Amino acid sequence: MKYAYFPGCSLHSMAAEYDHSVLEMCGRLGIEMNEIPDWNCCGASSAHSTNHLLSLAIPARNLSIAEEQGLDVVAPCAACYQRLVTVQHETRHDVKIKEKVNKVLGDRSYEAKNDVKSILDVLVDYGIDNLAAKVEKPLQGLKVASYYGCYLVKPPKICHVDDAENPMIMDKIMTALGAEAVQWPYKTECCGGSLLLSNPDIVLKLGRDILQVATDAGANCIVTPCPLCQPNLDTRQGQINSKYGTDYKMPIFYISQLVAIALGSHKNNMKLHKHLIDPTELLKVI
Amino acid sequence: MSIVNLSEIAERNAGFAAQVLEESGEDVRRCYQCGKCSAGCPVAFAMDYRPNRIIRMIQLGMREDLLNSRSIWLCGTCSTCTARCPRDVDLCRINDTLRVMAYREGIKSKVKNEVLMHDLFMKFILKYGRIYELGLALGMYMALPMNGIKDAGMGIELMAKGKLNLLPHKIKGAKELQQIAEAVKRLEAEE
Image (tube, rainbow over all chains, first blue to last red; front, side, top):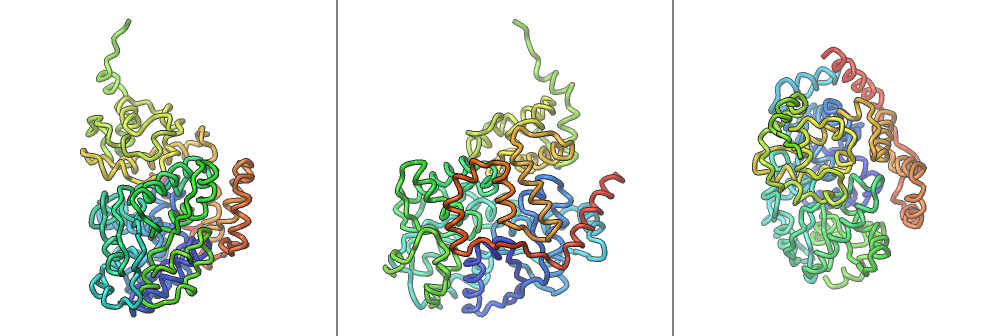
């Protein structure tokens, strides 16, 4: 398996441990990731909040470069994935939009021939049974709340998972790794990622709700494929505890960290020291 | 007491709904006000007009109220409303369109911080080709010093853990992105 790799800005700064663990995981699975040369930001929520055509053209530049390589594109960041897959969807379904995008791209062209995939798609393509067969260190003792967040699963016409309300893909992956997949009702609730810098109080409330529901369900950790959700729940946990008088110490993992550990990567190689909530004590159970 | 005929008002002000349809592809006349969008919206509690009212206001042509509302900027674009709508109205996309309209017309939102965040974000993308997280955070803290004070402790921890790059990374294609933005402006001016 071979893909064009779009890390996105978060994976090159706040979420460096996600980037690192995705590449480690893929290396162990024999999945080749070719970073898109000179990739640019996907535009995130700011581009589509201010100009629709620009919000398609900015990420289209990346897809165009990947198309030259003849590869499908993998974007581990849920927000980047949503922006890229939106471009793919709109240009495939609307000829006029495709024309306009190509017009503003100048010398480049984008035919929407390649697919855009999330990190969950990559693991599903690999095969969850095949993944289970490669597990060297089962994650027994981990009670994992699979937190998909919103961008990877919605809107359902564009972001295709098994079920936008109660997705099970990541739960099945966690079970395949030997962990217990705790069932809880907040799998796809929004953490408020896009409001982090402008309205932090809203974000703290949403984070508190998610941590509480996961705790009530008996989870001892949360796993996510989103580099907005992870820092929101991890780095803000102290502020949530101060504001609400709670005492959460919930480790928040990236999916690739847990997959790589189960495949035999050493936990010390997962850059877990970058997390504010230290998961080392919890990982002693496996 | 006077009687207000909402159907008449909606008919008289149908131009706004038509404009929203033209720009977003979404027809608000489909909405039958079940309220599922508001029930599921994670930020409805903080909004001045809840999601189902946004649609009703478009139907009634309440353009100025909506483009000046907090709601359109507080929407976190999670698409839960869209996922659950039994009438297949993509409200998340409509909110995009309302934000774009307000932004284009330079309407100073009551949620100025949101507009500032998008301004800074776009500035960094077009200048460097990638987002400069530390620059974005510092820019926002200058506008919202209280948030800066609250986040100072956490910020120090993040720096200590090497989670934030001190300097921006500029891609070779940054100029290409500026040209794309210029081309978008030209194309829109022609239309």
